Image 1 (cartoon, rainbow, N blue to C red):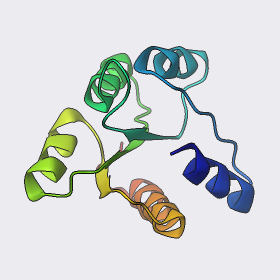
Image 2: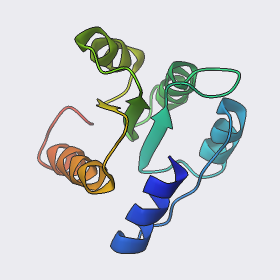
Image 3: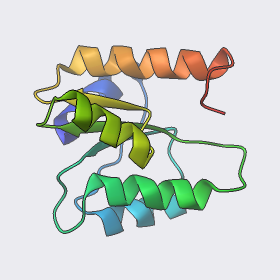
Image 4: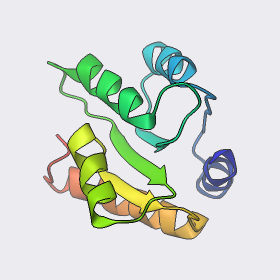
Amino acid sequence: MDAYAEKGSATSGDRARSAASVRAALEAYDTQPPDVVISDVGMPGESGYVLIRAIRDREEGRSHRTLAIAMTGFAGHQDHETALRAGFDEHLAKPVVPDDLLDLMRVLAASRMGGGNGG
């Protein structure tokens, strides 16, 4: 996952941060909420679902809603629906092609700016 974020960062000029656990990710979020969260569902200790629920709880009552993409080795329809119900905006099955990830981020950002469901 870090390699994808770093490639996107290098080609787009954006900054990327990585975290090895839900706790570390939430500490980074609390310090400076990102525009986009890309999370593996299978994180050490706690899942990416725990992470996104905690982020959505922190956003309660705020106007900003972080775009969130789940990455997982499971690609079934149920896996996609589970990710969306947990609070992710989109779900990608691994292996993820970096350019596809960047394209998805652009689509999600554009839908938010165009009055999509992103808030």
